[in-house]
Image (tube, rainbow, N blue to C red; front, side):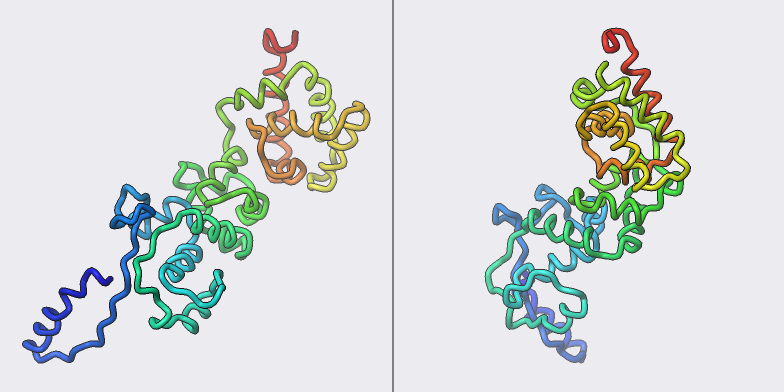
Length: 272
């Protein structure tokens, strides 16, 4: 960094005294916080490993760092080979650059959606492990990546959002439950339970048709059936598409959670 320019003459003199060859020195501008101050922990992560802990992919961090104070036209996304080919010190800015976490999140979302899910899954496995969960006790991680990539900013977000696929949740989200796990949802959930239990194969396509059929026979819009089901199986009102979520969760967990939701509805004051 250019904060070490003053040290360079001393380093050169030391090397000369030792009879060592003098390298070619280069100094690039400092990276500052959004407030223009020296980057520190109060601005967030302070080391590369902390960015991993926060759920950023290595590709996103590297792409972000190479663009700090350097540009190649209007290009924002760079492969490693392109970074090596295009990078030139002459294109570096002379002024300090500032950390912009919104830009890093944008890059991270891009790589979550475009990298091979098998590659992303290796990083997701670590994040899930940090939550004390064995990722082998649930759906295959590449399939989880595919399902959750569109709605996740970071791997940490993804791990938290997918946690219900690997362990039972403690409680329903109060707002989601009060709106969706009502007396009116009891019969559709009972019908869905029976329909799903009878399915010969557990695939997203057949699951979608089963939920759609229950909505049709109930005279309800699909959302009026799918949303109580979503809250029943995930504990919240937000998840990937319901058919894919059911497939990931699996038959036994799905049926058990519908039964749990029916018990919840049957509690005093809910079932009337």
